[in-house]
Image 1 (cartoon, protein in one colour):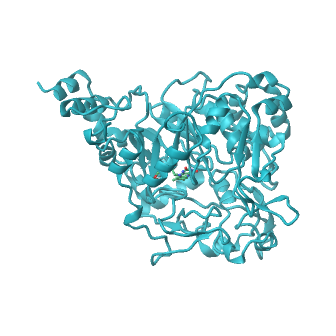
Image 2 (tube, rainbow, N blue to C red; image 1 turned 120 degrees about the horizontal axis):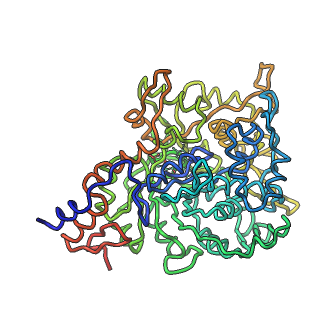
Image 3 (spheres, protein in one colour; image 1 turned 180 degrees about the vertical axis):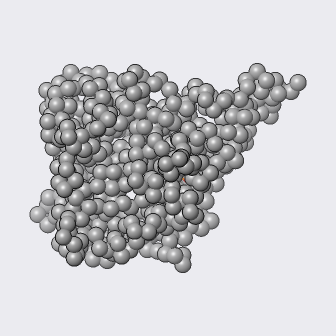
Amino acid sequence: MSLVALLLTLTPGLSASTAPVRSIPRVIQGGMGARISSWELARSVASRGELGIVSGVAMDIILVRELQQGDPKGIWRRALAAFPDQDMVDRIMNKFYLPDGKPDSVPFKPIPMWTIEAPQQLLEATVVANFCEIWLAKHHDDSTPTNQGFVGINCLTKIQLPNVPSLYGAMLAGCDYVIMGAGIPMEIPGILDDLSEQNDIQYNIDVDYAEAADERTQQHFSPAKFWQAAGKPEMAETTLKRPRFLPIVSSVLLAQSMLKRARGKGPTKGIDGFVIELPTAGGHNAPPRGFRYDPVAKSHSVDLDARGQPVYGPKDKVDLAKFVKATKGLPFWLAGSYAKPDMFADVVALGGQGVQAGTLFALAEESGMSDHTKQRVLSDLSEGDLSVFTDPVASPTGFPFKVLELEGTLSDKERYDARPRVCNLGYLRTGYLKKDGSVGYRCAAEPVKDWVRKGGEVEATIGRKCLCNGLMADAGVPQLSPFKREGEDDRYLEEILVTMGDDVNSAKHFMKQDENGRWSYSATDVVDHILSEWEAAGGEANDGAQAAAAGVVVARGSSAVPPSVVG
Ligand SMILES: Cc1cc2nc3c(=O)[nH]c(=O)nc-3n(C[C@H](O)[C@H](O)[C@H](O)COP(=O)(O)O)c2cc1C
């Protein structure tokens, strides 16, 4: 009997219901803001032995809005009860919790918008919200720990201001992984090192017209001061688990530059692996090479296809053999239409660890997308293929952003143009130096006159969309605008703007309709599908057997690395 066959006999394939115990995950359910990758989704994926990522994007506002909706299932209150400072919890509950929920005709009570120097109230809401989301993903409904798989958090590098307190809150709950893209997260590995030791953090914030070293661009977050202000200084005395850090990259060059220049400890600068994301992925995409960014217009000069989408060419392909060599054998996962058994096998054959998927998880039963929107998308899918538009200008970040074309939603130009422009969440605002020397904040999707008053070019506002309010509506917490749509009597209720990857039509393979006409499938259906062929062939045991048979070195506890890239 061959070694491979012997190992397969001794280690039968894992059944779908058995959660494998791995030292490192094979499937990552990617972070999806805001709240789409909810604790429930992440818990489900972790319960299958893999890595579930919650979104840290705008969790502060999600917490305070859901408390104002009355927290009908008591989920937030269950997590809040586990937070180590109950006085802080009381302050949040007293300000925002409405036991009967707010009436639909009343807007949500706001919290302050982010600035470089954030008030304690905002820091507390952010730390607590991110703690809760990770804590919920790591606990059963009876509040006992699940101790299964891995749970991590995703923040966007571009949404700089809430990042440090968000990561800190997640770490207080024992977060296992941090995954960040949408920008180059050079400082993050070092920040994680420091937060784990409860050291003071200084974070460089991008401020237009300011020099990088300008003191006005520095954000300071001190765990000691945070807990001092909260009246619990002893909380800053323990060390916290340092999560593994995976940057999201789209080129070999970027991975190499992170390994050289990132601010983190050790030979890999605090980087524990990479997610390589291709431009078919949902959410924001890296722009094509040579897609020149204009910092004044806050946009890219464009090479667009007939539909008006950025054109990706051969230079945007990632040479995986080069990637493996350049990244010192660190594990990597491929993302962007990779949620398929054959694609998974391809990655593993190349020495990769596995895949990260988003789109198929976003439509799974456990995701945080509002049920109304999810049913709308699934029911449209049941009638035919849907189309995704890579919008080069919609996102105020300047990155291309994928928009699912859904009739009657903000993906329609006329519908969006009828939305009263307002900026009342401000996560995508960026800093700029004002004439008086202070730092101001602006967003190209805010009312045009405000943007122009702040020195912005009018051209930069064209086609911009308010992702903050659109994504809150997707998560089921839409704000009642202070304004009305032209010709209407009632105040405008913010509408959905859905992002999906090019893989959206693959959801048809999973979705089933029940007798009430409701469509659904579970996150574990997606994981089972991705791993089906590999697990049937013996999973890790087979990788090891094949590697042993071929005489190659097995690295990272599991993946087979071809001999050409070892050493
Ligand atoms: C609804 C949705 C929202 C997303 N939001 C984020 C995000 O906030 N941060 C991020 O790093 N990636 C985000 N992504 C990308 C996913 O994490 C993942 O990398 C990607 O979806 C993988 O490709 P796929 O969509 O083809 O599966 C989002 C994707 C979707 C579908």
